[in-house]
Image (cartoon, rainbow, N blue to C red; front, side, top):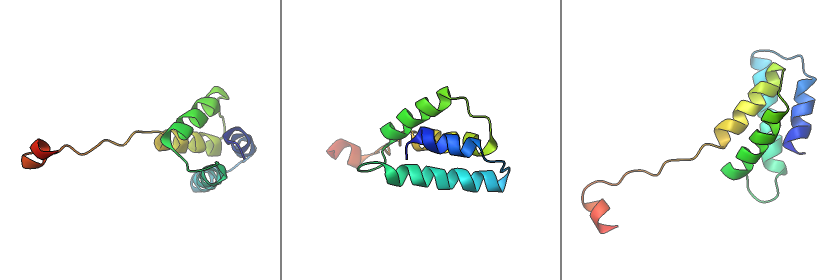
Length: 88
């Protein structure tokens, strides 16, 4: 399923609070496992952009978009200090 299809399904949900968060988490996992290959931050950013354009209203849909945003964040490389920085 695409992120938009999952978002539309979550928009029909009346869940709130923990239930909305659980539904969003399940939707995120469904999206991640349905991707061809592996789920990358770039794929999450693309899905986040398309889902944000739909302006989600339900709590579950908003939580799903938040999961996509978190998955699209870049990881920072650790800073090497001292001898390790000079050698590499």
